[in-house]
Image 1 (cartoon, rainbow, N blue to C red):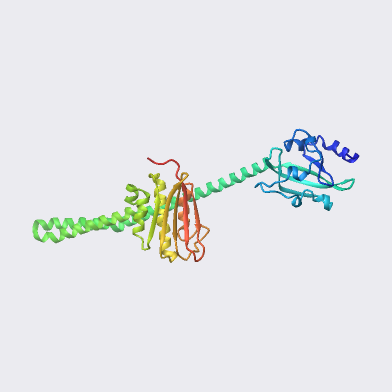
Image 2: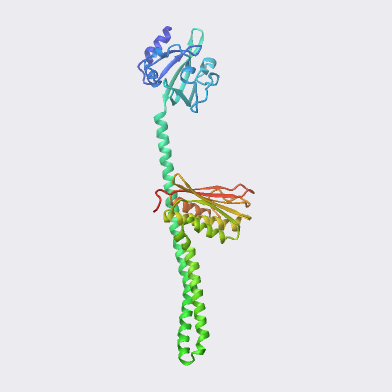
Amino acid sequence: MTAAAEFLALILDGAPQPVWVVDEDGLIVFANPAAVAALGYDDAAELNRKPSHDTVHYKRPDGSPYLVDDCPMLEPRRTGRTVHGDDEWFVRRDGSLFPIAWWSAPIAMANGNGAVLAFTDRSESRAAERALRERDAADVRAAESRAAQRRLVETSAAVRRQVTRDLHDGAQQRLITMLISLQLAREEIVADPEGARPPLGDVVEQARQAIDELRALTAGLHPQVLAHRGLVAAVEDLATRSTLPVSVVASLRQRLPEAVEANAYFFVAEALTNTVKHARATQAAVSIGVEDAVLSVEVRDDGIGGAGRDGTGSGLAGMADRVRALGGRLVLDSPSGRGTTVRAQIPVGRWSE
């Protein structure tokens, strides 16, 4: 070792920064204790005169070989310029990898330039960055969930107002008319029993119409087939009433939690409504299944595609709200001219009994 190298070793021996020196041939001629420890060795002698790249930098994180000709850390030997990077990985003695930030500067050797290389283990900083990203992502998901729940509450209020109007303008008016007809029929029976038959027949018809309106109204709120027979039966019933041919492929071993079934049903209903209104499709298909405690509900059509990828318009925002409110996500694939596929993935947790 030259006098200059010995002086450098004296300075760097107690430094906390991992540092080593390579000669003109890329062989390690010095490694301070911090570098030895970071690379998992017991003594600097285990690194002495070993090829730098082939010892600590010979593979990439995916396991593929890292060729020495591609290594930027040895460039100062050739160019005489200092280089820096923060996207490389070193290999420990046991074969494990860790991310580093590094600096490499030229140093004069007897037969040309060597390089002084310093590095910092970025494992902790990357873990902190990942935790920060995950926290930020969790905050975004929470904000989206709160916004979705708020929109659902607003939508529910609008639905209640609509139901109130429908009851007032529809079934309630029929029931009032029926009550008046019954009062008139009761008076008619006393005066003319035979003449009371037609009015009573009208009352029966009015009662039937009121019942039909109430059934239609409650079906829009929560179909009886969904409550009594579950999601698959309700979606199959929905498919039979569609103006488009709709095939249903479903496999559920047990009933799902009520909230999941209801939101999944209305997700399909909204998707099929969008298909009929906007897709210009000739057919649609629904698939339902559960894997790894995640319910997947997919609706596909052969229409014109081009649905909004931002989740807005054509009812997509409301569909996304339904899914997010249950901690799930909506996936949209709608290339122009090649149909639309919309998929809800909802964690179902424990099965309901």
